[in-house]
Amino acid sequence: MHDLLSQENPDEAAVMQQAEAIGQAETELHKHRIGALIKIRAMLTDEQRAELIRIREETRSQWLQPLIESCESDVDRFCPDAEGPWSRRGCARDHWEELAPDCRDAIESARERARRSHRGKPGRRAMDGF
Image 1 (cartoon, rainbow, N blue to C red):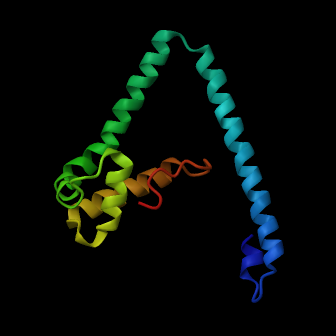
Image 2: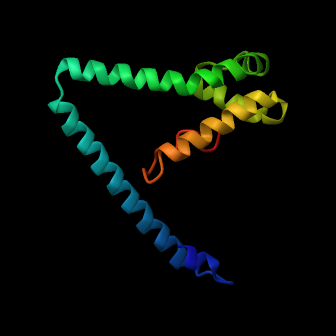
Image 3: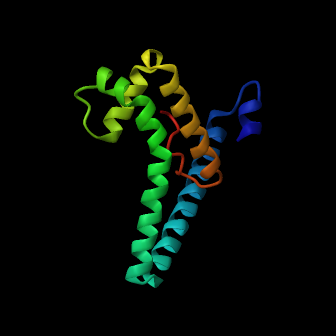
């Protein structure tokens, strides 16, 4: 794709064909990953599944706590009617320039952690586009 787009006058049909092929490959990878997760889940005991959920929630809390501490007052001020994390996230994005520097820093830090954590995992860029 890079070579196609680097051309002075890229062939739109070739670019779109390549984009389609990349999209199909990413979809197949995602489906295989989900299939593997489902198979692994079926092998877990109830206790193992509960421990996995506990670990996931603990990790999520560790990632989100700096955002909550740094951004809660800004989000409450600029987005009082926003309900749910996606709505609050979108509203914060709309008010990016007005957010306190420590809030913006916390968001940037979370973005970078997410990018490092999800490298090579299609569709797993949790903070992209924040």
